Image 1 (cartoon, rainbow, N blue to C red):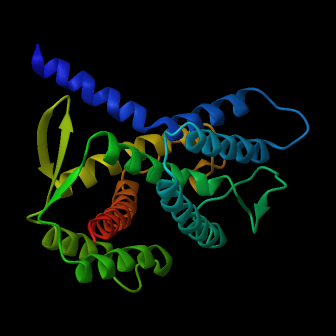
Image 2 (spheres, rainbow, N blue to C red):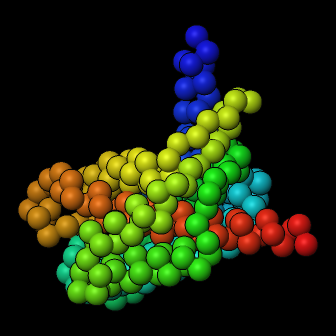
Length: 255
């Protein structure tokens, strides 16, 4: 029974770490089904996300340091959204007062929710990194991956980046604690798992019209499985930023 108990405990910690994403998905569903008065749907989603962020900090579910990380991800995500919408990769067809160049401000919270999950899971599972690559390698790699989203494969092909990720993190592991017992898995595997579950979440989000791909303009369809690679790279960037900030903070607290 112990493996089953450990799995339940691990699932519970994961669920608690996903509070912000869950609120976003529930809000997407409810505002799709129920038409709220006075403001367009995108504006209500922004208000809900702002209130949830305030509640997370006021209740102690997120620290102020984690809020700084999440805010950084909001800005990074919003910049990416502005570029991708301009290039026609996807669209936000509904009206909204809080849209900038066709992008509603609530969209940045969808990226911030990934950072929220990482920060929450890191703290709840007491994550430790084993054989983490040097700072001088991690930062350029994360920068190259993020810039690749803007260069549309003209600068570095994603397969090249994937090979670099495998090489850099070949010996890296992530250790975590569940109910007093420590486990570990290859870091690259954790990237793949998180990226796959975000792809599932993306299908749910597009079903509730969070955004719309060109092939979904007439009717909803499953997001192409190839998008997992995009989310995988985004997860890697997110994880590298969070891990780097965590390590820098840890060193500063020891000085």
